[in-house]
Length: 68
Image 1: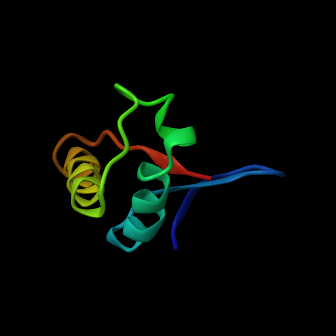
Image 2: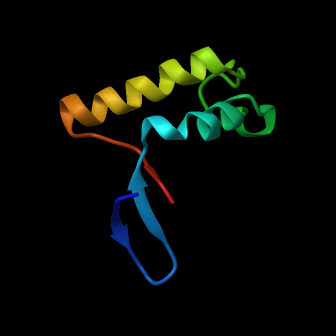
């Protein structure tokens, strides 16, 4: 796991393909998704597509989301 930013209390890293279980669990939780987009929960396939878009953005444009 490659941390790209670290402080005394937090560490940040880029998303990876291995984060699919985490992204799928968050995306299926209505209490989380009510604050994201239109609030609709996502199934695992839709969460995988979302993660793939995030990874493509990092690869193609250098823009990425980070995990703490």
